[in-house]
Length: 257
Length: 236
Image (tube, rainbow over all chains, first blue to last red; front, top):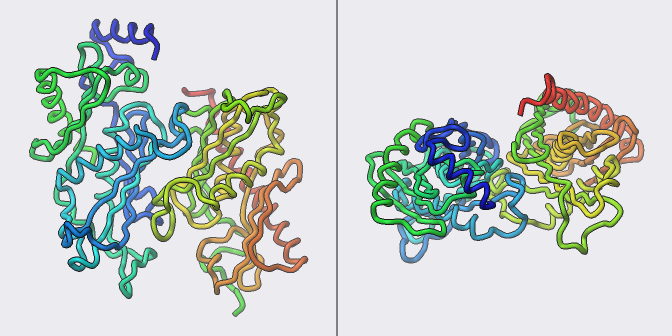
């Protein structure tokens, strides 16, 4: 991001316009497609927010429960910033951006108690289901956080347990049993650029962001996770504002599920 | 047991249903999706762009760099561990060699053309699907080329030579022979040839003829997808 572009953006914002003509709190068109890898994955989904496209898939394995939670299953969230999706992404092990993205998605699902972990336990202290969610951007045109969170929830919604035969997973057949998905936490990220709050930035706007706040919100409007990012600070008033926008916008995003 | 009828009811020289689309990754210089049966590959091309570190640069021509990757949820069994494996590295290499003979990178000294291939769903023939998608993506990116590359697997299942094996056929009675091929149908050259399993000399000849015919059909679909992308001019 060079200073001239940023100045230009701020100039636009002060006049009440966004880079692509949207309102400050307006999302691009959101679509969800289920079962995009239904032969391979236990559940999968494609989310598009404008030109941003993210895939998420769920694979499940049987493992030994953790000693501190012997009667619970668990989840694992992994995101990889594919170099296919953005000319600035490089091959190699996940960088800090990919790690933050996966942990923010993980936090909303875990702390929002989306899945009933107790129902993922097969035999106390011996066997549990581990639900592995993998997230991949295919085209990064900004706002991967919200697209990833929505894709992960959609993939979980699409998932069915694989069949178990002789204590082993038979991936060739699915049971018709859905995952114990009890709540649907979704993330909305509010970005602060200059003195303006915007949602769903396109890639040009995203590169000008001073700070951001990702808010995990449940169906009833309660919050379940927060993550502040960016190089600038936020005042308590800022946070108030941002949380309010997030609660309002997640209601909209939810309709796409 | 003699293999009288194919497991999915196809004729011995019949491809699985094929779909192709050009322009699936907006940010890339070129991109394409190729689906054969249930195998789905997408490919995106970035570049020509500066290649770092400099030691890898070629002072007289551009460098082609391919990366084949299966998404973690795209395997038929357990989750595929993310990151390069020995298998994916070898496949990346042979894909590079399958595409390179048809490309003219002489104007791109010091630069790299990156091709990223991602498998979303797999059911045998993933490297072939990857090559088909990559070749269309390179054409979409405007990289000079003599011809598209079309690719398909052939093999021997239960004593019969067949075109385009499914995963079920690869696993048939535990010993099917799988031959991955790629053709430039215009120049008449084979640019990929890998075989796992046993065949006689005659069977190999027959298999390659079958592969060539399959590739001709695939090429028609690739060309059609490219034309669809550009009909009425670029829309973006």
